[in-house]
Length: 68
Image (cartoon, rainbow, N blue to C red; front, side, top):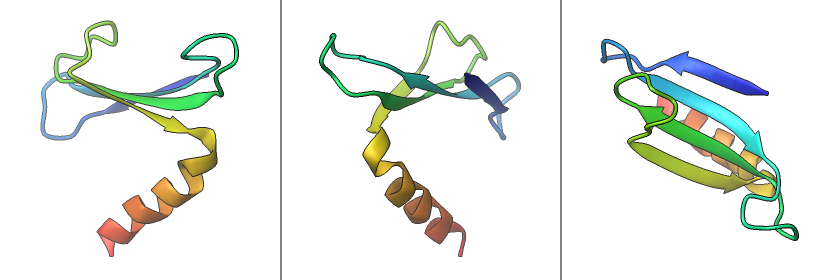
């Protein structure tokens, strides 16, 4: 499952969020991959981060605290 979000402040930019199973080989754990493309091309990303699934709740809390 993939989610694409319009990147505010750009004409065509997108934030793509997807679950990647075994990103580093057969025995690696799944990660959430968050990629930003300023041109809206999900194949050519400008930034990417992989977050272990076990860290997602803490990352969400940290992001939400930035809005406070």
